[in-house]
Image 1 (tube, helix red, strand yellow):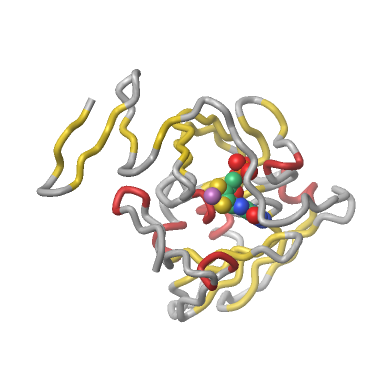
Image 2 (cartoon, protein in one colour; image 1 turned 60 degrees about the vertical axis):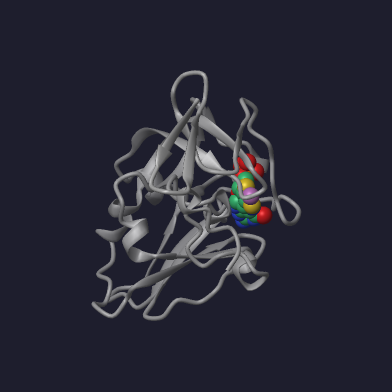
Length: 200
Ligand SMILES: Nc1nc2c(c(=O)[nH]1)N[C@H]1C(S)=C(S)[C@@H](COP(=O)(O)O)O[C@H]1N2
Ligand SMILES: [Mo]
């Protein structure tokens, strides 16, 4: 089914009426897409850092992270290689909960997500502060699989999935935007699937 919005954009819907961004097709599978090998992470050694333009930088371990309030949310997932998995249930900690642990400087406008293995991706603080952004450790009721980012991944439903960094281990608060792993290689700095912002 097609619904016209604006002059040019046509938004498709899947069988259940969920909207699909332009140029995407729907899959029920949950493919794995990684730029490198899956890092082996021992929970005992796992650390999460928040640093850069914040008043108090923090470094917490898995036990401290799991003690934070958790939520369960449903979200869609759109890969820039054109598959969309519209139904995912994530459990984890809201980004806004992490914000409470540090005091971002008023000059902080962007965040670089950092991962085990060296992957990075940049997102504006504004987009991350949305109430649907979470640091997830469960997918569809199960602990996150290693290939899908265990023990912890970022989930940013309103951006292409390359912004949902797997094996997340930190946030760097920044005044100016800076390209991450894929953004350096030509992917869009914002990556909004509804505007089809695939390449910069
Ligand atoms: N650390 C890390 N995170 C990553 C990637 C990656 O290569 N490394 N790939 C991204 C891309 S392009 C996509 S589509 C999603 C895929 O998540 P999945 O493998 O769990 O489906 O993870 C994103 N997060
Ligand atoms: Mo992707």
